[in-house]
Length: 307
Image (cartoon, rainbow, N blue to C red; front, side, top):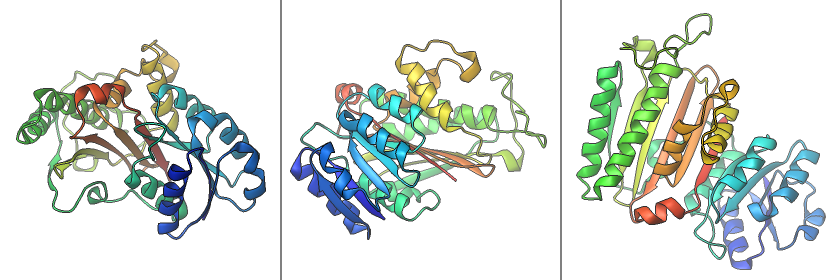
């Protein structure tokens, strides 16, 4: 895989290139859009700040083999436009400021997965060595409530602010609700439980989602996986765009996006992995060294992978 990195900060560009090189890719770094044409032949991915996203979108639309990757130090709303309008852009990486590179683990994940398409990485890929975790099965609405309580108890044990445990409890509730009400379908592909999200649900063995929660002391990772794989790309990007715009109702495309806002507000990064008809896996990450004010203002990351 060959990557073209458009980055006006030389040090940031060099670091990103080094990360691509470390997974066996080749990479070239340029500082201005006018330099891209001379290095784009044979490229598989072009990376840039959202400041240059119009240019990136133009390049990937003209070249079917080319993928786009964005990073940003701004709120996610501006970047979402390009994910919605351009199918070849599925990844936005948040960074602290315009002088900082995106998080190394995210660049590596994108580089590895674009270069060698594969299924979702294991939970351990998001964490440092020595992490601890719990795994829960949710077979009913009673199990849902029990799982949310266990999520909050697990996080409270880390002696972090109470609001963090509450945020992840709300996040867990939202992701589990999607997995037990929205995901299951019958043999004809019709949703089985989505019509009444207040109904008492008891899932069959083939319908049960898995909930994983882990920490390495620096990050929290919450992962919910259902066995259906029905989540659509547009549900994620357009839903979040509606939520960030104030939640205007749009019944033709999935409601107000309020569920996606719960995910956005509680995390530093969200990773969606969908294998059509096999699984939807949603992974949410929170950096424990960040205070809640920073969480509200930081640039968030968003990734969508599908197979």
